[in-house]
Picture 1: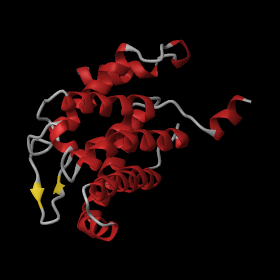
Picture 2 (picture 1 turned 60 degrees about the vertical axis):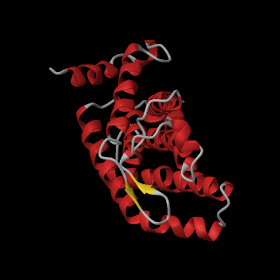
Picture 3 (picture 1 turned 90 degrees about the vertical axis):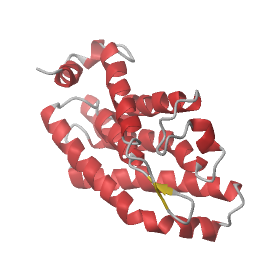
Length: 209
C-alpha cells in the first residue's frame, strides 16, 4: 500500500474519537496544498483582459470536493500562507503579495472561500458522492465565488463592473471543464475511500435524532 493510500485509509477510523485536526488531516491538507502549487508549474496563458488562465483553481476545487470544508480550507490556507511569505508558487512564478497588488488579486483572495463552500456543500450530500451534483457545487464555489471576488478586486483597481464582467466571460467554458474534471476525480476518490468527508447538514441531524 502506498503512502497516499495509507493516509486516506486512516480517515475511516472512528471519527468520534479523532481530534479536530489529526496528523492525518494535516498530512492530507499539506498534500493538496502541494498539489495546488504544482498546478501552477505549467505557467499561465495571458489574455488581453489581464486575467491569466491557470490550473490552480482546479486544485482549489479538488481540495474542497475531496477533503471537505475543514481539510480543504486548510489546504488552501497553507498554500496561501506560503504564497504570502514570498514563495513564488502562484502560476507564472508570482507570490501572494505580487498577486494581491495586481488586477487579479481578488481571484487569489477567492480561493479560500471557494474551497470552504465547495467542501461544505459536498459534505451536505455525503455519505454518497454524486458526480453530477458535485459539478454543480464546484461551479458554485469554483466559478461564482472566485469570479465574484475576482470582479470585486478588478473594480477596486478601477475597472467598471461591466468591463470586469466582460473580461471574465472567456474563462467560463474552461472553468466549467475544471468543475467537471474535479467532480469526476472526487467521485472515484470517494468510491475508493468512503468516509473521507464527514457528512454534515439537515439529513445528518435527522439520522442522529
